[in-house]
Image (tube, rainbow, N blue to C red; front, side, top):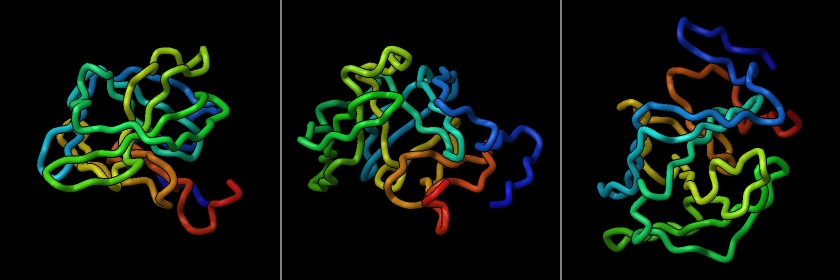
Amino acid sequence: MKREQCRPGQESVWDYPRPPLLERSPKAVLVSFAGHEIARSSEAYRILETSHPPSWYLPPGSVQKDRLIATPKQSRCEWKGTATYWTVRVAGRTVENAAWSYSSPEPSFAAIRDYFAFYPNVFECYVDGERVEPQPGGFYGGWITKDVAGPFKGIPGSFGW
């Protein structure tokens, strides 16, 4: 694995810690689906973890929860706890398990209790007006912007990273 050269103003995901770091961000974050706004906030949190572009968590008050339906799916993160997944339903379109949240996160991630994270391969996600690219691989929910340099976990050959 060869690290990408950082340009001025970029962060390398290889400098992110493990266990991950929770960081509040004042950047403007927008999430939309099928042309409808789902969430907007300038009080989001980023989770920074080695080899991953940041995942963004938006406060529950900034989310149009009437467009989300809890599903029975759950997953477990050794750092954050057990995630609950959400289906988005807007304008006759439905995508299952398109977002997730933690109702009872581990103590070090208590700040994101009931915050929502969104898969950018399903939603149109923006940070300070920049459309993000989804983290490769389909499983991960990282948001790639011009501010981060990889390579990113999820690319072919990265399974053992």
